[in-house]
Amino acid sequence: MADRKPLYLMTPALLWLTGFMVIPCLLILALAFFRRGIYGGIEYDFTFENIALVFDPLYAGIFIKSAIIAGQSALIASVVGYAAAYAIASMPKRRQPLLLFLAILPFWSNYLVRTYAWIVLLNREGLVVAVARALGYDQELPSLLYTEGAVIVGLVYNYLPFVILACYAPLARLNSEIGEASRDLGAGRWTTFRRITLPMTVPGLATGFVFVFVLSIGNFVTPALLGGGQFQMIGNLVYAQFLTANDWPFGAALSMALIAVMMGLLTLQTFATERASGGRAGEGDHG
Amino acid sequence: MGNRAPLPLTLTILVVVFAFLYLPISVLFGLSFNEGGMPTAWSGFSVKWYFLLFQDQDIIHAALNTLVVAVVSTILAAILGTLLAIGVEIRRRKGRLLETMIFAPMIIPDIVLAIALLSFFSLLDVTMGLHTIIVSHVVFNLAFVCSVVRARLKSFDWSIVEASTDLGAPILVTLRRIVIPVLMPAVVAGSLLAFTLSVDEFIIAFFTAGAGRASTTLPMQIFSMIRFGVTPEINALSTIVMIVSVVILAISQRINRGGLPGQ
Image: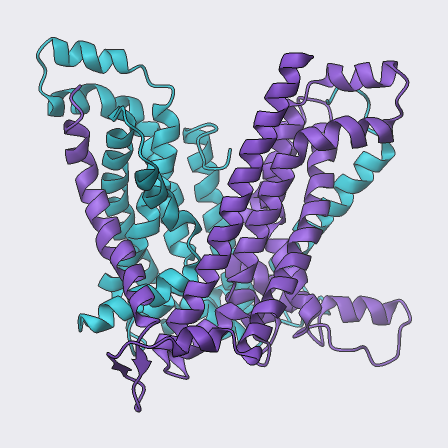
C-alpha cells in the first residue's frame, strides 16, 4: 500500500491529540514564562521568575519531599511486588494465570475507592485502631490517618499490582533449566537467585520502580485524602496554584518541572533497559 | 520456574500480599451491608444504605452525568483510536515522534493534562461543562483503544489486505469487509477499557467541569463526600463503583484475551 493512505486514517486522532493535548501542553509551557497579574490574571511579559521560584528553598523542599515519598513508595512496592511475582512464578504453571489475575484485579477498581478504603481502615474509629484495642493496647494511639506513612501505604497499595505485572513477565519467561543447571553445579537457592534470577529479571523490576515513582511523585489524590489538608506534594501544590492561589504561571512552571523530572527518569529507564538487554544478548553469543 | 512444589516461604508471601491487596476493599464491601452503619461493630446484614443511595438526587444526577461522559467519549475514542491504530500499523515507516504522541496521553500526569486543558479552555473563553470533560476524556481514551487494537494488529496477516486491494477493492471496502471484522474483539475490548477509565476518571473531569455543580461526575461526587469522612452511603457507593469497573474489565479481558495494555 502507498504510504499516504495511512495518513488519512490517522488524521482525525492526530488532530484531536494535537488540539487537546499538544497545544494545551505547549500553552502551559508558555504560561510558565509569563507574569502573574495583580488580580490573578496573566500579564504577557516574558520572565524567568516562575522558573526561579520553583528552585526557591520552600518549593524545592516540597519537590524533594515528594521525591522522597515517591522513592520510598516505589522501593517498598518494588520489593513486595517482586517477591509476590516471584512467588506466583514459582507456583505450579496451571495456577499462575489465576493468581496473576487476582493480583491485578484490585488495580481495575476505582482509584478513589481504593484510597478511601484506607481511610476506613486507618481513621480514629477504624478497624486498625479497634484491632489494636482488642489486642490490649489501651494507650492513646497516635493518629494513623493524615500522616506521611498513610500516604506511602496508599501509594504502595494502589500501584503494587503494576509492579507484580512488570516483574512477573520476565520471571515467568526465565528458563527453569538455567536454575537447575546452577543448582546441579552446586549453587544454593540464594546464590542461584542472586547470581542468575535477579540479574536476568532486573529490567522488569526497574520498569516497576520507575512507573511507581513517576505515578507517585505527581500524585494529587492520595496526599489530598490520606495526607490531610496540611500535607503537600507537588501535585497538591500545582492544584492549589490553579484553584485557590490563582497563580497560573507558577502552577505552570511547577508542572513543567514535574514533567522534566518524569521524562528524565523514563528516558534513563529506557536507556538502561536497552543496555541491559543488549548486554545479555552479547553474553549469549559467547556462551 | 514453576515445576517444583511451592516452598512455605512462597506460600507465606502469597498469603500476606493477597491479604494486603484484598483486606481493605473487603472491609469496605462488608461495611456497606452493615445495618447500624458503625465501622467497628457489626449489627446485622442490611441493604438499606443502597436504598438510601438511590434516593439521593445528587448521586443520581452525578451518575447520569458520568454515564453521558463515558458513553460519548468512548464512542469517539473507539472510532479515532481504531483508525489511528490501523494507520500506524499499515505505515511502513515507524516514527519516534508519532509513537511518543500516541504513548503520551497514557503516561502524562493527570494533574498536568488537567491544568493544561483548563488553561486552554479558559483562554479560548469556552464555557466548560460535560462537553469539555468529554473532549478531554477522548484524549486518553483514544490512546488506550489504539494500544489494544494495535496489539491485535501485530498478529494480523496484512497479505489478506494486499490481496483484497490487488483484486480491486477500494480501501473503504477492504476496511469494512476484512480489517474491521478481524479487529472487532479488540475494538470492543478497548472500548470497554476506555469506558471504565472514563467512569473512574476524577482529576481531569474535576478541572474541566466548569463552575457550579451541574456537571459533577460520580468520582467528583465521591471525592467531595470522602473529604467529610466515612459514611455507610459512601461504602455502598464505593462497592457499586468497584464492582462495575471490575465486571466490565473482566468482560473486556475475556473478549480479547491477552490484549490489555501491559500484558
